Image (cartoon, rainbow, N blue to C red; front, side):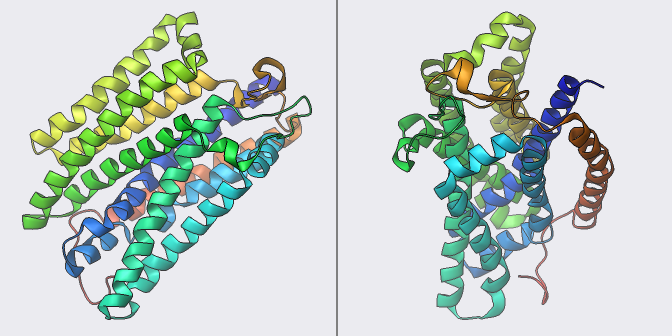
Length: 342
C-alpha cells in the first residue's frame, strides 16, 4: 500500500472521529449550554441526567482526534497546538470545568452551591462549543504560516469576524442538537416547554447557517472550487440543506426522534462540506496557501507508522463503537430521577 493511500486512509480516520465527536458530544454540549434555561432544580437535574451516563464516553472521541492528529500528522499537530496555544488551554479549562460541574453539582443541597455549578456547567459548554468553532473558522480563513511552517501571528489575529461568527454558529448548532435530544428524553410539561425552546434554537441556527454560508463564499471562495471541478459533489450541500430544513418540519410533526436523526445527519453534511472544501489541506497558510500550507501529504508520518496505526485503529474503534452502542441501549428511554441520580 502506498504512502499516499495511507495518508488518505488516516485522513478519513481523523474525519470520522471528528464527525462522531461532533454528533455525540455535540448534544452534551448543547444540553450544557441550555442548563440555565431550566426553570427549577428538578428540571436542571433532568438535564444533567439526560447526558449523565454517556457524556464521558462521548468525549473519548476527542481523545481519538488528538491521538490521530498527533500520530498520523505530527507536524500538523505541532502547528495547531502551538498556534492555538491559548485556545487549547481555554478548551482544556472548559473540559475540566464541565466534568467537575457535572460530578460536584449534586454533592450539596445548597441552592447557591448548585446554582454556581450550573453556571459553570453552562459557561464551560458554551466555551468548548465556541472555541471549537473559532478554531475551525480560523483553519478555513487560514493562519500566518511561513516557509518553515512556523506560526508568525499572534493571539489577537485569531479574533476576526468570520471565525467569531463561526464560533457563534457552532454554539447555535449544538444548542439545537441538545434541545432536540432533551425533547426525546423528557415527557409531560417539561417536554412541552422544551419543544418551544427547541424551535427557537432551530431557527436561530438556521439563520446563523445561512449568514455563515454567505460569509464563507466571501471570505473563503476556495471552499467551493472542488465542487466546481466535480459537479456531482454539489449533491452534498443540496442534501445538507434539505436535511437541515427537515429538522423544523419533523419538530412541527412532533417527531423528535426523526428531528434528532436529521440533526445528526446535518452535522455530518456540514463537516463533509468542510472536509471536501479544505482537502488536502490540514492547516492553511494565509501568507502563501499554495506553498506554505500543511497538507495530508507533507505532514504525514512514515509509511510504517501509518500502517501500524491503521491496524490499531481497526481494532480499537469497533470496540469504542460497541461500548457506545451498549451504553445507549442500556440508558435508552425517558429520564427518571432517583436517589442515585445527579
